[in-house]
Image 1 (cartoon, rainbow, N blue to C red):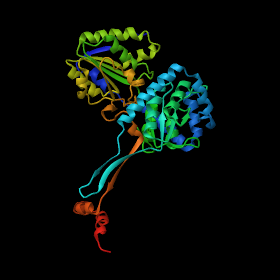
Image 2: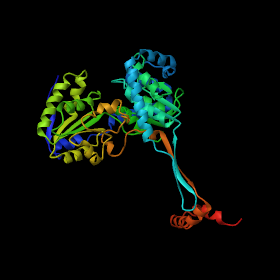
Image 3: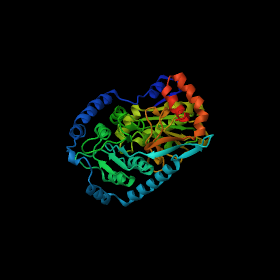
Image 4: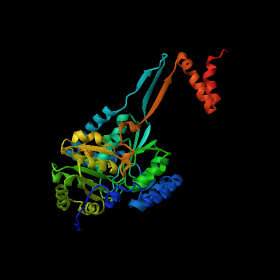
Length: 433
């Protein structure tokens, strides 16, 4: 096994740092493949879904087998350990509590002349949830997506996840999807799952919105169906940045960096930033030591070679700015007075403050969804929330006095924009019959 050392660089302006920051969120090959597959699914529906599932995943499915039947879900319940039942239950309770606390509330305000303005938040009718399952059965992702939709009040929650070559879905994943509130489960993954949910087939009714993470091919497919459906965010290969000073335990830092390197796509990113050269060397040594004990060492070493960087900066403040430029999916602050630095973080999907807040707590149980923006898109997008499953409608309830008071404003805008019908629709209400 190649155990070459992770690079350590000094300063934030070198070529190595710039190259690391300029990662691309999209893959041209994946975009081309998604275009071909999506066009075929749009034209041939279920038959195309089955053909591409066999070609990509080796699963010999037929249209009548795409949906997971009730008997299989019931069987999965019996196969799941009691320990996992308890773990899933605890995670769901915490996710629900956080989701409810963060939901926007309907509100209203009075107008100057006795009317009313406000906003209402209405759940979507039908959504699609994508849960990766190729490299690992991501039961936690089922909870971090479908649970939010259920809390939001979505009636129909269709979930797609890949099955094995034997056509079966991991029982722990099935259990988690049911616990989270999925009302339909399909044994389909990849581009074909996105196309199936976006366009609809004889087996699957189209959804209004698709949420959930995935690799480069799923991300490409989601980008191309935008407009046919609404989307959540860009959620591709995992990434983490850790900012730690000399007070941090190097074992913790290394373990947290490796936690995101084990997902298996090979495109994961891990950035360690520190104002201590000694800490940089200590963490590098720990990375090599700990990697050798992991069950996915091969995948981890691949990321260590091409997707991991250690940067020594002059101060914690400079380190924060570098992390903002990186705009990571996950950002850990293992520094003295971590809470005081939170206000300086501008671009991160989720922030973990202090040595007792490892990223894995966010992945599995803390409460906020772990579906977060990647590839630098945390500078523009936010993580998944309950409100992503709701529509916002504003309302205006003017009185006659409100309209009369604002009529001169309507008339002036109509004149400037040449929209006399707009003006007429207000004026006519004050004309005698």
